Length: 282
Image 1 (cartoon, rainbow, N blue to C red):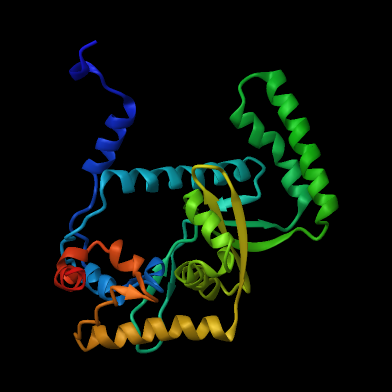
Image 2 (image 1 turned 90 degrees about the vertical axis):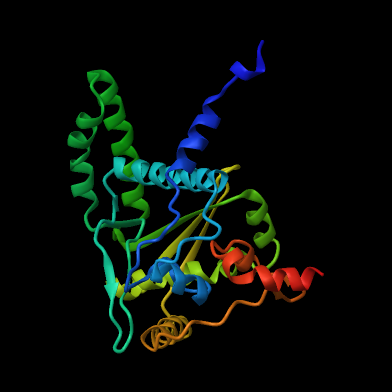
């Protein structure tokens, strides 16, 4: 077989995803919830619309694509029984003297009345299944499952926001072996806290899924004075620099004797750190 004629769908999809990569961010006057806890210098340039010196490559975007499919699959399964919903409503918080912080939660889940949910199964399944017997069997099974949940959680399920994050199994095992995933990614806590703060909720869940193994870890995040202070320090501190048109300081390239991963993954690494990295390596 002529190697030049060999091809596979993975290469086609990877190339296609890479073709759509954003190289110049759109200038904005708002802080995204997903920005919080991340380097201010990167946020500054992104909000200014500075072209990326290190845009996401096809491999990174493909991993992101897989993560979004996991999130969609999880949501679709829960939506089958009418207890989970995509949150299309934008959450926006405008603290005094600060830039707005905006974002959209991945999923919210709520059950006020189990009987209402159970009664809605007939309509939900009829829209999903065309085969009469298949639909009947699925309705029976799903109603049985919902009855079990009603027995287990008779008061229903309080409205809860979920943020789904996909990571690889190496990161999953590394953080599980130290302080646990609850302490692994502070910026995820701040992102979720934005939704709790904006929606007036006291609890939300971070759902970590290892995209190459299917491992799942669910971390409960509750409002606290400590988390509120972290959130306000980030938003107020960055806003003050923004309004004064003062560029934030660079991140240190080394932390605790190790390379700073936030610098290594920066989309502005070559623009901001090329001279520093070169000096440290020589």
